[in-house]
Length: 156
Image 1 (tube, helix red, strand yellow):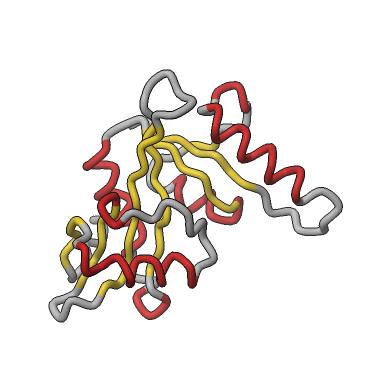
Image 2 (cartoon, rainbow, N blue to C red):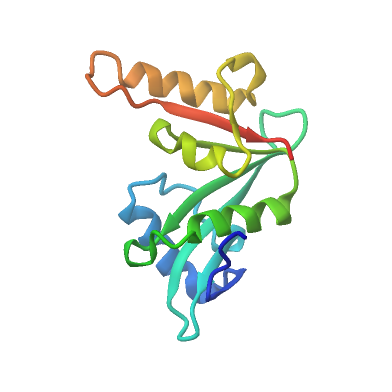
């Protein structure tokens, strides 16, 4: 049976904005476009936010809206309890398929456990995702780090 967090998964509120920004920045994730209105958070009985996830909708450059799971963060002291997976499942229920994401390649297996599959052919990706991945590839040329930007999709 999947883990269900002790705290409540709920839509973010205006007072959560500062905490969301600091959680995302602490993990060195993309700090742009962090609108609290697009986030779901897990908070315990005392109101402490233990994790968050964002549902972005991209309409620009796409024939139809592309929904992206973004900015998944679990506070270090709350990790190892299945909270990240619970946030992913919650967002999957809220958004429905297809749901896209971009992540560091070391996280591919985490998302595969939630039914996401890696897309390697750029012609099958939303155009903006393909462009971002190509830029990431160019930026890492000559570096010894083998990590890459993975593009994944959950089709339900």
